Length: 397
Image 1 (cartoon, helix red, strand yellow):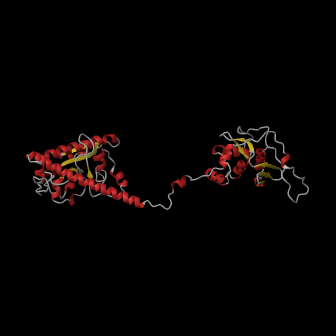
Image 2: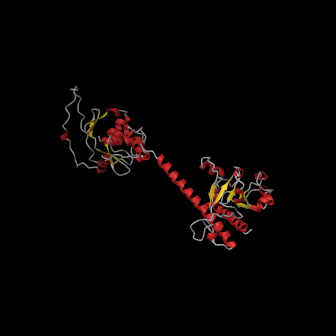
Image 3: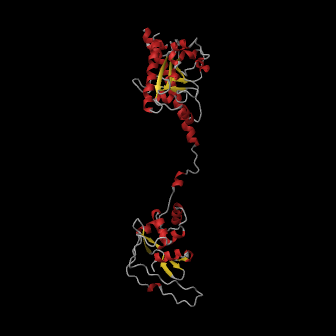
């Protein structure tokens, strides 16, 4: 009987426990003995013939998950059965199917040696010496099995994701500090550039030199400290947005909309920021005909503004409610929108009622799509165009 048939016979009879390894051979009770590395008649879909030790180890451990089985086989230095061969092989060994295309019976199948008799069994004849076996053909060397037998897993998928005894918290802290410092320097540079530009524009209109307007003496070394405020006021212009959560543009999403031309719903952006609400956001136009213009401060707490801060307010995103302007230092919304440009953001398919009130005000209505995000850029550019035109008109008052 060949090794595969013997293994199938013992598997069907439920006598796998009688298959015991002694040195370099498997003994099937007192019936047969085969070399552990003997090739069986079962050919894998990869093309190689499975050895007896591979099939014995598999049929005794088939209940394991494939990953656990592979790891266990590697630990025992035994070539494993591929995942695709597992089911059909087990069905054949358990007798659920009588045959399979994977079986390749060959005339030179290893001849089983009689299993050696037990020491106390005097009735059994003495086992024939192993050198008396007849081999018709030289054994075929399975080089792939030899290679797999010496393979060792260095790292698995989980080990690659582990970084033991390492703490990246300090890296996070340092990178965060560097980013904060970079933003602070950029913000200061933007403020300085805006102040210089506003003074230069005022100087050109009054026909004075740039150095005189900035307050520098003829040598250009010491400032005269004679700074005069313009119509918009000294410092970075301010844009006010509603603090209400249900409006389209808020302190959470205004930066992405005005700088990148992308509308992100407030609730989505708030979750990305872990609910952390900034007191002030700096925005800058980065696209269109005049990219990277001076920066603007965006705030949503008008009550925190000082008297001199109101001179820097140039725009406001409105809710369409009168109570939004409560305690503002202006007589009414007519005066507000004469000195500040107003924007009302709406979805293009919203009802007319949503804009009924603001249509009575001197504000610009800007529509965006609920789903077509590629159209956001045009809406943001519309806001910038109106804002730049308004600031230029104020500078000439």
